[in-house]
Image 1 (cartoon, rainbow, N blue to C red):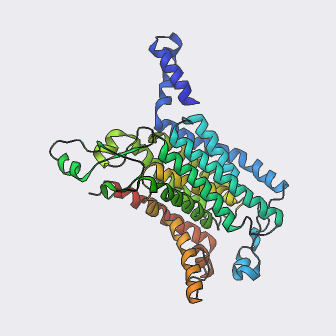
Image 2: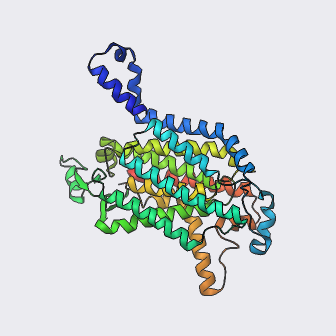
Image 3: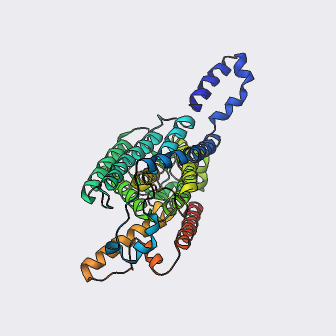
Length: 399
């Protein structure tokens, strides 16, 4: 909306229309920094204002979160017994706030905005179906793992194909020769790299180009991130708070990648003139999560459910691909990786050795069973997430 208003004003201003000269403040709408901050603020306000209404509506629909029985989780059932009946599907509040703010402040036809928003909505719809089945059948199983994974792969492959075949989506990097020659007066970042290239901040050139094989790689990133956030969403505000630090980091990365000088000559990271707009979408996600955390902090009045966690994970995975910093997500999203790996290791160990590595997985439950209070686990994981995000961003200027 605002970019369209700016475009209309700019044309009028160039023609010398009096009203356009009077309304010069509309020039502010062209700046990504202003629109990104405004999107974050609007999504926060929307979440806080509509949060109580959404919660009351979910309660009236009796969509309480099913809690696993003592036979399934033993001591954990005692710790989480008070959560029974807390409404779930609160992720609709996050998705709605993000999409509305993005439509107001961003250019929705920007290819990066479009693919991230559509992936978020599609994953959110899948999560909604899963939550609905859990509530309807009054158990914590929901859609079968195989069917859920199948639909996630379909969504991820569609997004991956869009990213691969859309011509406007292409990064720019520098070859090792250009880095050496840069000292002799050559401009860095002039060699274009395709969307199929893999990069990492420590290396000022593309590590390798997978070409069409990048499509399954992108699908793995999106599905993996979606499921990792879903596994992290087990304590009040844990996934929400962690998402804030990750989304904020990638909003910063998107802004830098869209700035020609900062990307190509100072940091030497993949650059695309369209990518800066993605910072608006990510800041809208940050604001929505802050607003949702208002109600989701311990003791939670609402859970995001798979509706929110699958949507957030899909959006973050897609955003990491768009910025061409997929590998950096392992560091910045380290808490999500830790949660997912704890489940993989636990299952693998039990199947191979008939022994468990952790008292329970995901790993946040392990620390609960060690005696940590729920708030201690949440805050400490938030701290780890912030430190990992700072470390990931610090890698941008090394070498």
